[in-house]
Length: 119
Length: 240
Image (cartoon, rainbow over all chains, first blue to last red; front, side):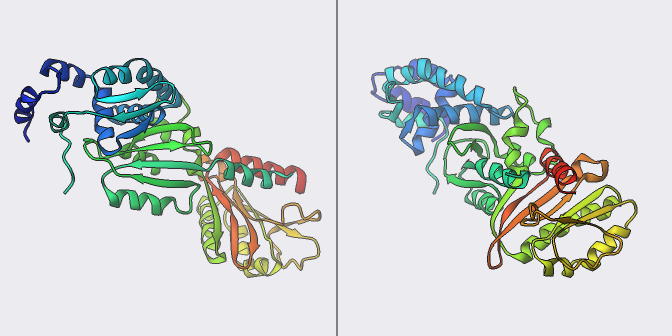
């Protein structure tokens, strides 16, 4: 599916979310990283996702993520990114247990992120 | 406890875990192979949908996050002579600590032949430097007599000084090599080769091994200057 097809699939889907809302969510690099990661592993923990987010950001800027970067990502994910994804029903986030589960990510979102199953 | 025991325990305690996230199974298999004898466990986690070649998360023996980086940066770290770790950007100056496990390589089941090859690598550094000081301890008397010719040659090489530590009561065949009798048997329970670098930090290197059972050695080798310095200081002050 090319990006324009994905977009029109997004317009057509009936997920209780507007295209604008979805695109606003996906404009956040951390959200894109989390949605991409959860595609392979729908059950994850806050610590696991914070490690992934900090590392992917470091990889993109050719640096090394430190324990401080990891802690910052943990705090940010806990207070902002994961509740936001939970509000939009992409994931269910249990802040007490630190457990994250991908619930209802609309398939056009994956296509838009360029995720395709390896053949 | 002498620093040889302590160094061995420290290296064991600093065992790390590398979680490799990539959809390239060959890259993951190569890293597993490469770290088989180093002080790290490698896990492969296939991922789809990331643009990057992949990334690595380094965890301590307590499972804590110690660092994370792209596979291309990691490759640069693995060839320290081309890109020393400290040249790779980080907001904290702790990448030396993060990658210290690469400097201290633990092995648990090496054969005598494999260890000889590692020892030879250090002896060759000393030979090329033609200066500095090489310290060697033998665990068995036959091992010493096997190496006599090699050590006579090293002792004749330029300004290189060689000191050999032997257990009490051994027949010592050397003429040009300085021989120190370790009467307490403190260090000759190890097979070790340490080179002080001959004035060059990058050349500092060492190997410490214990013979646990028939033809199986446990120990580590290191290019970490602090570890090498500490072990040599102990030999100079406590044993000599």
